[in-house]
Image (tube, protein in one colour):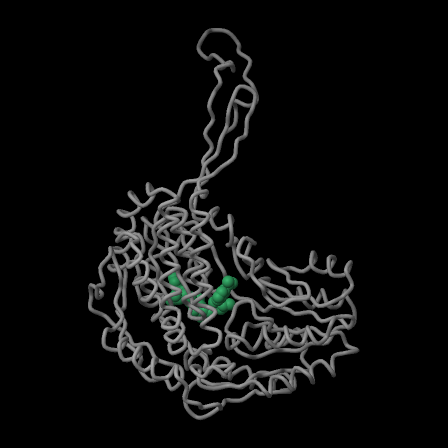
Length: 517
Ligand code: NAD
């Protein structure tokens, strides 16, 4: 394991000490507050699982307080002009950029993600705010749909206070991805971050406050999913829930939100295939395959965790992946040379480790890694399973670690059948130089997003989301506003149409356009 002391460490020590001293509280109605019941929990650093800070643990009473604050603030925030919202959201982006190093360091300490990736994640958080800031003035725009005798026009209005529930992997970036469009749309927010990585949510709340977002517009309640999270999804003042997390949690939220008819947006799990045909640029494909499973500790929803390789190149290509995997530097997340840091939590570490045994039991070969690294903390090696078949658990279940399962295929039909034979459908990656095959395959792949001859390179206006058990709804560009806003149609009569007369003692002709339900 790499263990180099770098200039990051001194700064990280100070930030850690400050975080410990302050503790982590809720931010409700513009105030930093403890839980009403005084409950707390501890967050740990996965490097050695020592305590990082004490965190306020919210429950239904704290959520109620936050939902009311968001409801009250909505009455004025919805009236703030788009241009003013644009200004405020750009200010948030400026402050994120100014504090990017601090955000990156704290994110690394709290989640175990390597600092080299967290610096980009903080920058991406700022970019998310800028992107939606610029769209705020046009968020309400609609269409003109003229009909005989009528002018119909549509407009969009913010749906109201929304709940945002985020997971522990890259939490800062993912929170900005939800909160920025909600605010640009004119919604107010109650954010419940994951209990395993609550630290940077506090920075985001601080930054939004400093940028001048009025009190109550964004509220932050920490706590566990089964208490704070559940209460948020059930609260009658919360009109919609944007959730990123596990598929089974999505099902719970759908049930919990049923009584109050919550609008839901789910970004859930994945077991994303990367399909490598023998005509592809194999050097580039290798870089992308390795990047998409071993970056961000493999704790990324769009990771390509199943590599399907055409049988003629299978042995050589897997040997090349294994060689790269063995060279990957696992270690201290604050070291700029580190490529894989520790997994977020001992429970997640145990889960990932259990798949090493599972692979052996199922008869796959561990071609690289497959073991713990070091004796403290939650470090595992970059791992490759070969000789796997698609029906094995290592090919079907989301491991959410730096663990890749390689499966051979014969031809295009075989590859497609294997690629689609999972319950998930978030992303797919396709490597081929055959143009018609690329189009044909991409259209048949059961996934919300397909990249051809590329790793995941996001363009913010494009739709992001999954099919099957990977999600409901799309984020990105205007798609985000469709979730955070209601579309209203207004029909203006031009005074030329005839209204059918009832109660005048003679049969009337009713036009078919007048009998819609
Ligand atoms: P998780 O579902 O365990 O938790 C996510 C959040 O939901 C946490 O804040 C948690 O407290 C909360 N929660 C848990 N139970 C709840 C309940 N009953 N009601 C309301 N809230 C509840 O997920 P995780 O382990 O934190 O994150 C990893 C998962 O997230 C993986 O499956 C990954 O694929 C997925 N993910 C998906 C995307 C995507 O865009 N599709 C992006 C990132 C992560």
